[in-house]
Image 1 (cartoon, protein in one colour):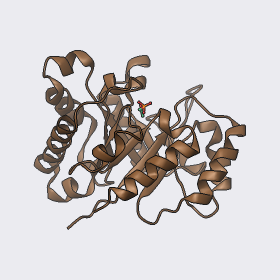
Image 2 (cartoon, rainbow, N blue to C red; image 1 turned 90 degrees about the vertical axis):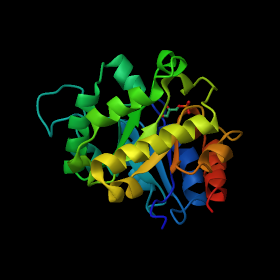
Image 3 (cartoon, rainbow, N blue to C red; image 1 turned 120 degrees about the vertical axis):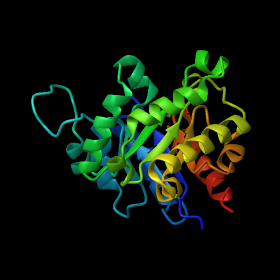
Image 4 (cartoon, protein in one colour; image 1 turned 180 degrees about the vertical axis):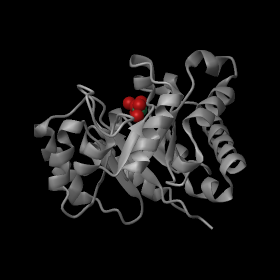
Length: 253
Ligand code: 13P
């Protein structure tokens, strides 16, 4: 029995100001959470305003990162509790841009995910290989290691979303083939099943991210073990994101 609802997440990264909320109003009028989960991860500065506009709860909201401890003297950081307080339901953790720029490790991702769960946020845990690993057939080894360290049974109880984002596919207009994506996703599902049991494997959503656009989305969203998409560039304009939302709805069987 299918227990996983498909989910589409727009990651705005470091883009967006108050003026962009006009576009969001357009999006809010055209969507509902009826068939799939629709999430936007705006910059933290806009979360609260987003939440205010989102009176019908047509959108779910996500942070893009959080700190691993609850509060304290960490200048410039944002806690999971603050994201929750501003209206977020999810938080993206371990995005490759953070792993690269801020040297975030899978161990740190696990600590952040634990804190997120504690504060009532669902983590969206990103994994993905660099081009060099892809080219030397090391993808599954890299993914296995990242999953092994990033997850534990407490985090799994919250049914985290796992996002497979090959680093080389992000913003590059390149993607792995549908067969390659399916291979990584079914490998991830098996990893969850072997380590945490069937329930976890059936309930955690495994989504794909990296250069998803209107031309490739239908193929990717229809894959057996793909439960959704993590969208960067194509989520910034409501009209583009809406198109992907429609494609995902059409991919439902
Ligand atoms: P693009 O869709 O722009 O490739 O970005 C993917 C991504 O990094 C989403 O988190």
